[in-house]
Image 1 (cartoon, rainbow, N blue to C red):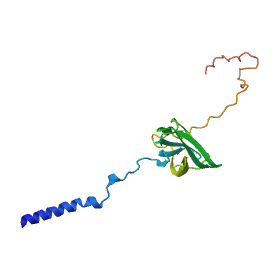
Image 2: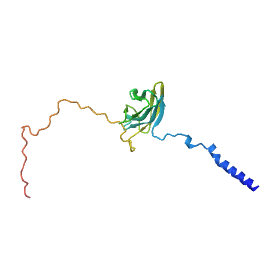
Image 3: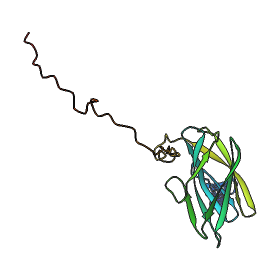
Image 4: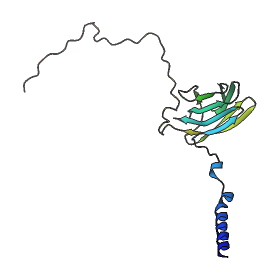
Amino acid sequence: MRVAASVAIAGLIVLGASGCEFITPQDTTQINQVADGMNATVGSVGIRNALMFTANGTEASLVTSLVNSGSAPQTVSMQYTSTSGPTTQQLTVPANGLLSVRPGGDQTVTLSNIQAKAGSLFPIYFTSGSASTTVNVPVLDASLPGYQTLTPTPTPVAIPTGTPAPTPTGTSGGTPAPVDSATPAAG
């Protein structure tokens, strides 16, 4: 009788301890995004870790990777609202390939005339073929380490070329002015 009771108690302990696995959800069955940016898919093109970096809130660099799993190149259109209205930019992602979009990457995309403060989300409407999706892209500034080179670079200002300005040559007579070589008075 004692042996039967011991076996029954051991069976209940094993059943109770293993029953938690049936009730509690497993963390390994859920995939969590471990990046700062947003992911999305439009047709055969994956948008991976999309972020925007701004220094002034009116101009921002888009930083993302576009991954084409299709056997043909895909054109991806990105539409956003600027202060002058809807603005569209297009990129072509190679077949079975990756396109790195960032300053210094395969392509550089600068969103101009926008209102996007650091810490906000900025909607960009992505289209490829007949598929489309809107991605609310996080806007960051360059204050974190590793992000300093990701804000848009200022547009160089063109300096008009023409007749160079005259350079000063000393006195008007063409000879240099005499230097006073008097010795200081003893005091």
